[in-house]
Length: 389
Ligand SMILES: Nc1nc2c(ncn2[C@@H]2O[C@H](COP(=O)(O)OP(=O)(O)OP(=O)(O)O)[C@@H](O)[C@H]2O)c(=O)[nH]1
Ligand SMILES: [Mg+2]
Image (tube, rainbow, N blue to C red; front, top):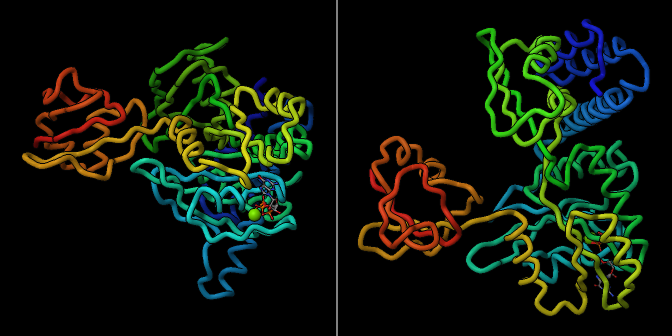
């Protein structure tokens, strides 16, 4: 249900979104809250804004501390490899052990909980690519409100391309999974693909709302959406509609910062006994997210298993470029299902896109080897391509 805010509140929110300075933004958010009536319909919204404010306060505080020190290492792990995957869970479930068993990480496994206190990376090789796993310090009840460096840790999760949630199969796996899922949801990190999503790109000029359609509206009309945006003083914007979108989703997009991160769940420590009941309960709680039973202690080919799962989960495809008369490159360019020749040309260099004449393809995306194709041809994993400009 849309929150039905009074005009002044909507106008105030518009001011918030136009303000980059954290201190001013915080003050404006406070003014915004004072203009929002307190009733059931606005509860979610008020919570959401309060959380954003708490996070902002935290960031301002951190920045002050950081400014006093000189430099200091960043909390965030720089991305490397084909994708960055955050490994999260409650304390002591075996996240460090997973990195030890499957990556080159020098992380320490400790018999006590909270052994890992900063995000710690490791590279997992899979065929001719690598995934970067990042162990995030424990997530607990209240992390989304800032407990136990929660804002920093959840910001690191948001920054990743995918998520591995790990629980201990011997220790209330369903309950712990649901706790983690709640903290993610509170932080607007979605582990499942929403049925639709909206992107609103505001423009500084013009006075019209334009739609880009890759989906449809559910229970509302374009006029109602335009009215809603106008109420928030958004008069010129590109509104990208994907999938099935209700008016709530549009309002979410005005405030929101919901992101989807593909996720799998690992039920660890199966070497200590496989509790069928606990596993089924966990699978039910996590559905439609896949749950995989593992042991980081007696792990067999865990590296291969995790590599395969991540490869499928993240919809990755590998493209091999080639020059005339030479063998294809050994190292692939990594992109995603649905990418076209145009996307790839832009990825290599905008020049390849702008001066593009045609491409030649070999392998899965070609109807026959050495096929001449244009910019709109979709690529598939394993395609070999030569670009002509
Ligand atoms: N039996 C068994 N023990 C495991 C397994 N994985 C981890 N452990 C043990 O569980 C304890 C915690 O392991 P870690 O890998 O440090 O767990 P963590 O999730 O990184 O924990 P913190 O970062 O300290 O919160 C250690 O004593 C590990 O030896 C497993 O698959 N089987
Ligand atoms: Mg650890």
